[in-house]
Image (tube, rainbow, N blue to C red):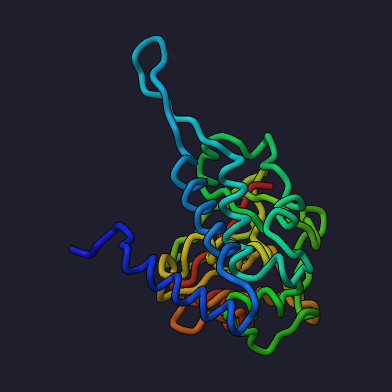
Length: 250
């Protein structure tokens, strides 16, 4: 059985690593360890519960803990430092609260996701080790500018893609509900990196909220194979086999 609790040997190793850091970098590991403590304490209490007067167990979600936890994930990826913040607390102050309209279970939009689009696409991809294939920061524009949040930090409720959807990009957009829109390139990165690349292994995801600036008929897609990449091509029939279509609540 794999040991799930940390050991005194690991603590000893951390002390050795810290001593080396002090000698070579002039500082210890206090900030990194404190981040780990915050992450563990926040994630362990995101969902709590109580018994109501009828004896039914009622779960409650602490959305501020979700806010802190997801912001901390981005901080560890390097978002805050790239934006010029010296500490996690400074970065967290710029992360908005979860909007009231996104509270609750969310129905089919099950995935509450923090998107920080203040970094350029190339910098975001660099931090997440995602390849930009034949594209750059200026390659994509919103399909529908009226639902674009621009270069900001914001929350979305997303619907995870399903592979094997053989409808064309145009058919999928036309099938959207009134409250539904496609994910942009930044939103797709946030959803997949937040849920874990392994969840989407062996297929890709169309980013229907973005189009190629030079040819609006072309939609980018995110490859989730061993090499993650944002790509685009001119599909012969409007779709690529086994690629999913992700969307979010407007």
